[in-house]
Length: 414
Ligand code: ATP
Ligand code: MG
Image (tube, rainbow, N blue to C red; front, top):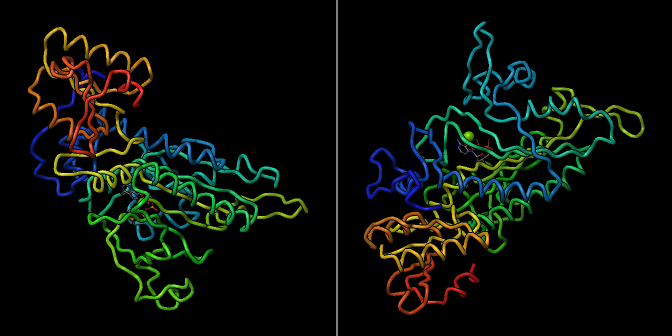
């Protein structure tokens, strides 16, 4: 993409109404637009990042056998009443609305109920199980506080996956695969080294659920880490008896502020029993389907990456997440420079490389400042100086020094 065509502008000053680093940087760099507290729009660069995260997560979910669906955001209160989750006392984040005839509707804050209800049309026998579904869907939550930028939106995009198994053992087995898939996601998203599988309270049907928590000072959560065992627990399970059961010693745990980047949960027959998702087993008996649910907030993940991977100049995107693979910056407007840069742009595109091409007539300082702010990990510079040496200048966003390489090397680098 030619940067002269990109409609978004960067800005030098952080917006005065944002306290979070992720929103400040993403607004300054033109990735997102703020509508109001907790409500953000994704602009071309931001949407490319979201789509990259969606691709990573989608590939990992597919690799463990999940099929992508998309359920409606409009929710029928009846199924939520059946599971006792319609009452505002029980779920305090509902956005509710009404049809013209006064019938109440909900705007989905999660999708266990409609997903289970939908499955009733497609599961009746043990032969129909296991089944795994996931979607990338908008959730609405009337969050009390929305001061963490895109990490806590009142409308946000979530990947939610659901598992439908015959037995608790089958669920246990799938759950372990999900843990591996989630770790792959956080590794590919560049925050794996700071992310911990964290024990959280489990509710009725299993001892624990798990959160994926990423250590970060901007986090709203606290976790307690045993670095040697590579394990963490959250506030809910910070009790002596539970620690003992997990083989952890309170004195060895280090407290850290953290961000919940994902949550996985074994529900057992919660929701499936209330909504009557049953199957006929091999022996002819009727059994209730065993449920698991697994969430990742895409905005939460994108915001976390920005919180962790940025410096005083701007964002530093990990390779797989970056809106473009290369930032090609042209310095100068004379025809030799223009045609050399245009040619390199064309050759990169021919090889399938995603390039942001800064073809704007601006001073070098402005171009480099924008380039650092936007944060694409690799920068190529074409200028009179590089042409005189028949070279291209390459600089990595994480490094301070640049070097001159041949065009051939530049093309092969990516
Ligand atoms: P929190 O405790 O932070 O409010 P939660 O327990 O309500 O999170 P879940 O219902 O488990 O979150 O949702 C699954 C995932 O969706 C979370 O792990 C997080 O990544 C993301 N998420 C939750 N709430 C938001 C939000 N308001 N904005 C963006 N992402 C969110
Ligand atoms: Mg919440």
